[in-house]
Length: 127
Picture 1 (cartoon, rainbow, N blue to C red):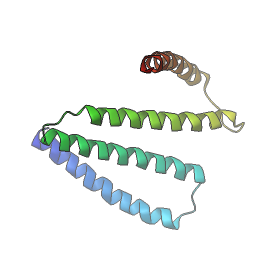
Picture 2 (cartoon, helix red, strand yellow):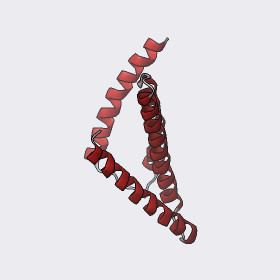
Picture 3 (cartoon, helix red, strand yellow):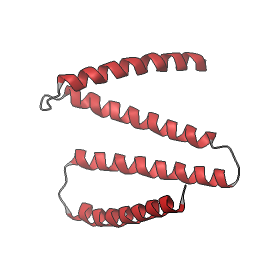
Picture 4 (cartoon, rainbow, N blue to C red):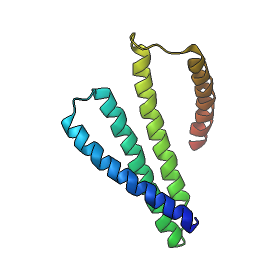
């Protein structure tokens, strides 16, 4: 990472920290919709877990250790997030007050079929 890039990341992170502190005050004073809060918390969890994995990656890189475990952690986090998202989407699909676009559902169906096939192969390979 170049110093300029590192500086840009630091600046963005400081800005994000400041914005999150402002959101903290807003969350404590506003009347919010429960599902919006749940989505916000899930987004924060993803960022928190990614930041932790990035920190582990940097620490392992500095100590000369392999970064394989960090990549595994990130992949595991994506699996957890995908599971949670699928559960939420399943709940949404059961609701009658949500309108979905056919095209996006067809695309989702196609990619989930391909993912299911790939998952079966990997799961079978794990024993």
